[in-house]
Amino acid sequence: MAYRPRPPVSLVRPECWLVALRIVVGLYFVKSLVTKMSIVLVAGFIPVPMTSARWIAVMPKIVAKQASENPVLWYKHFLEQTVLPHSRLFAHLTAWGETAVGLGLTLGLLTGLAALIGLLLVMNYGLATQWISSGQQGFHLVLFALMLAFFFTRAGRMGGLDG
Image 1: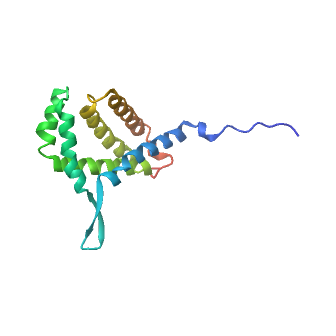
Image 2: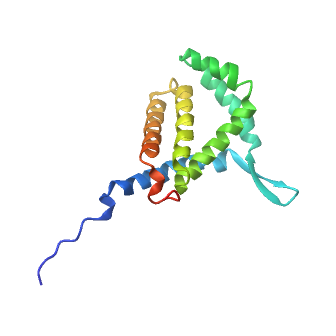
Image 3: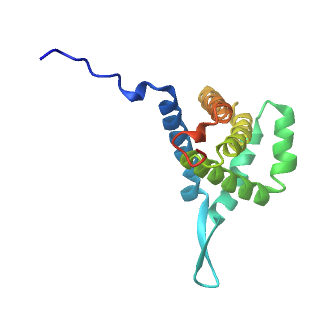
C-alpha cells in the first residue's frame, strides 16, 4: 500500500481564524451581561434585562479617575463636562453597547453594526485610559484594529447568522 499524505487541515483557512477571533472578542464584550446588566421582573414575572444599579453607581467613579490626569485635554473636558454630569445615561449606553457588541460578534449577527459600535466604544475607552499605562494603549489599539477587520471583512458571513 502506497503512502498518501493527509490533506492540509482546514484550520489553515484564514476565514476560520477570523471566525475564531470574532467569537473570542465577542465573548470578551458579552461579559458585560454579567458585570453591567441585571434582570428585572416586570409585572412580577416578565424578565427584562436592565443596566445594573451597581454599574450605574460605579461608572462615575471610574470616569472621574480616568479624567483626573488625562493629558488629552479635549477628552478630559468631554469626560468632566459631558460624561460625568450625565453619568446615568452613559452607564446605560456603555452597558447596552457592550452587550450589543458582544452578542453581535459572538453570534455573527449584524456584525458590521456591532463592529462599528465596538469601534466607538474601544476608541473612547482607549482615550480614557491611555495615560494610565502603556498596556492600556496596546490593548485598545488591538481591539480597534480587530473591529476594523470585522467590519471590512464582513466577518459574520462565515460561521455567523449574517451568512
